[in-house]
Amino acid sequence: MFGNFAHLIPLATAPQGPPKDVPPPTPVNFPRFYPQVQDDQQIAPGAADETPKSVVTLLQGIVRPAQLAIAHFEALGVHVVPNSTAADLIPDPSYIPDFAAWEELSSDAAHEANESTRVTLVSGNRSPGCNTYLERKRELLFPNETGYRTVRRIQPPKGQSHARLGNCYEFFRQLDMLSNYWDDTSVVDQPAPEGEEEDKDALASKPRRTGAGNQMPPDFRQQMVQTFLKLVAYDFGCNTAPARAEPRLHITSRNSSSARSSYFSSGCTFMYKTPTTREEARAGIVEGPVAAVSARHSTGFPPPPEDPNESSTDPDHVFDLGRELVAALVTAQHRAREGRTEKRIGEGAWWCTKPRWGGGPGGPIGREIEQQTSGDDTLVGDKDAPPPAADAAVATAAAPAEKPAKVSISSRLASRASPFGPLPSTRLPEREKESSSGPAKGVKRLKKSGNMAMYDNYRMIRPPALTWDKKAKYAAIGRAAGAEYDDIFVVSALYHHISIVRVRVPDQLMAVLEGRAEHEFEDGKRSWGKLEVRRSKWFDLFKPEDRVEAMKLVWCMMNWLMRAVPKDEEEKEKVDQNQEGEKDTKSEKEENPAAATLAGSQDAVEQAKDEDKQEAKDEVKQEDVEMQNA
View 1 (tube, helix red, strand yellow):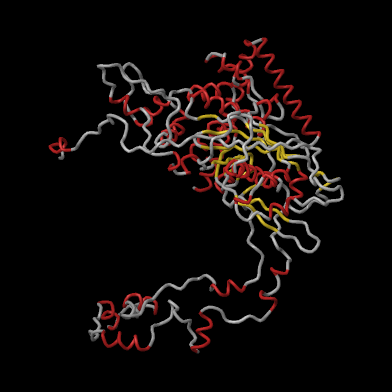
View 2: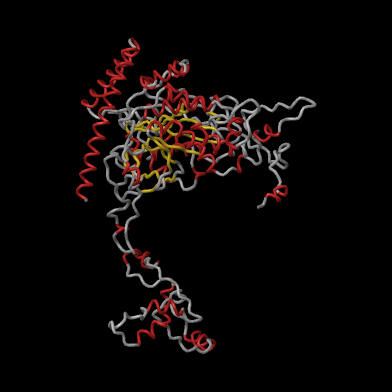
């Protein structure tokens, strides 16, 4: 019908050049604050009889972020090791797969050896193997321009087909959104030869920055990091999701008179283990946390020193490290809740049991004072109160004379005698009458709120609300059995880069922060030793090679955290036997592949027979149910 007007619709045209009035690019400078401490370092540098100041007291003295200083990191014993490799980050290097050997496998060889490279996880499932790794690597190595063509649905160059991004489609879509604010570092500008014009489709597929990096919404970075982590974490049975309750680091001072509780908020998200049952998945139950994700929007870091290993004491650098440590300590505190019940802050304290203002009787407050002065039962200015008498008289005088009510057919029928008995009553309830006739003019009727009055809510004396997530099964997944510390992994994100951070949090430090430790110092030294922080280098997600290196490190992290950890000696023996059996099976398959193929076919036949028997049983049960219903 509208075919004659098709020529009036302008066609989409590719941009002929870079957009105008583009702000300058945001400089990329990473924070470099690397405090160094020793285990035998004295806390009190003065006299031997001088008592060191409690670390909880120092932390509770922080009111504004600008008050965070180097002294707080020294009190915690923070020791940072930058530019760590995978062997330094993973506590047991045996859980680092042999990626070099996997990359040498062909497609058919990887498909055959995939089962032998999978291990048992803590959930009972099997980890991804070499076939999954090669697939993710192939997808991440696509050039950004190729991925943008597929996402923007632009025709590929002549003689080529569309790239199959597979699982990385969403990642390239998020990366395309980031390219509007950051220069694509993987693109090298090469001008076209003289006398030749560049293809319009090629111009449309190239990233064009239209804004500055500090103008990018923070959600873009958060979604990109979550999408990248999901490429590996989903196959290990994990997923990244924001916390339903605000992540808080609760600290409590241990005083003889009274304990003082406070907290530090964090904007981090967590990586949880997904439930294995459908009922728990529908209910939103999560288990963990497994790791933390800290994506920050800070872009105003000053240029760091020229030496990459040199530390900077700039306040912005110091504050950024503090945000990462708070995310790690919050994760450690959540993982330490396994097997414990929540205790409300201030439960049993005087300020939660006795009336306010020193136990006085109190009195009217706010509008209650006006109500008491006027002697009226309703509050002054109450929206639910009827209008004053003067306003009601004016509204009545201004209202027109009422017309005689019309008699409906149903009322006429009801008035006549019926041979079948009285007809049902047609009178409406009082509420329906009011709603049908409508409120009188000048009267504003509002729905009364079912909540408690503000003043009554203020007078209630009770402790603060609970802060634990009711749908979270707190567990220290991946913690080393019998260790006196917990290795916390934090995926840190800045600009368009990510870095893997491992923080070794001692149990004694968590006891000191929560006010459960009997002693904080031993001979003027910290009772927990030090807080070791190991950080990898920063990986640029715009560069395909960096993406693959970051994916390898995330794979190693998930392989370590989701391993089957025995809780006692019996489980340890079972795990060892299963691992020995898997090794024997691998060796047999390598020595005699024909026998392995025959055994696999026999297992498949037996599995098919079992499925046929189960289907026959289900059919018999269904027939019995139908007979009973008939």
